[in-house]
Image (cartoon, rainbow, N blue to C red; front, top):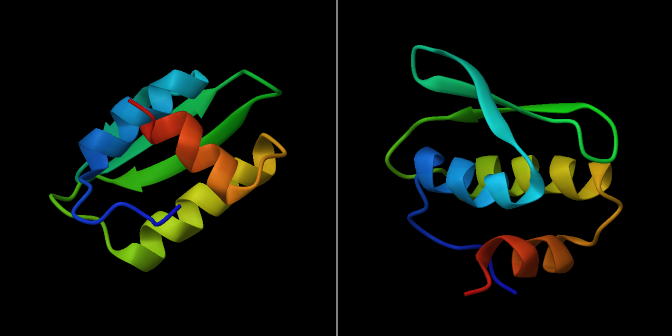
Length: 81
């Protein structure tokens, strides 16, 4: 599955709520999300109107590693209708 283009930080945060992530703090244009599912895990997401592909890829790889999923499995969980 291809990475979504023109995905904002807010839209990514909403998609990550499916995995139990919630915004725990925000400073400036960066949000810190935390989940306690499968152990505590934190991820920082820029709250920009469009995330760069490399930034999005790095964030998703980190989350996929935490949940022991492939990136394709993670994308299916986050962006399935």
